[in-house]
Image (cartoon, rainbow, N blue to C red; front, side):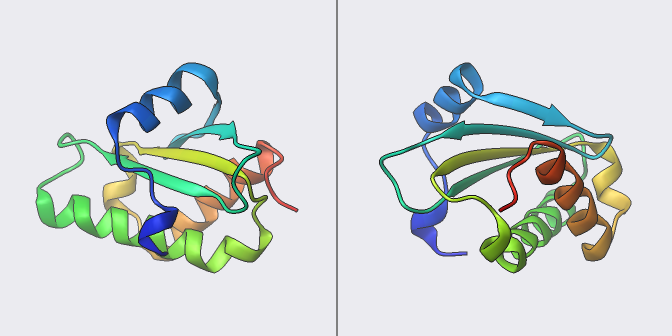
Length: 112
């Protein structure tokens, strides 16, 4: 995932939280906000210290970024996404995280 496709600033996160919609399952919480002035989607990731040490948190973030990269062609563009990982993600492998992300996106009707 390119760096321009990431949400980084606190203001961007707060806009998505405040004005966006959300959907969750046991592993992930998805917040999304339509952005009609951009032609691609942006993703922000949040992994709490409750999930584990830095190694585990970074692994979860890598898995989420890779899952978004593989699903990029199927996801609706012009959205800002914030993904919050819940505790069960620390014990999941890449394919389980990708399946969970696919479930959240499909229930939110964000696939093409």
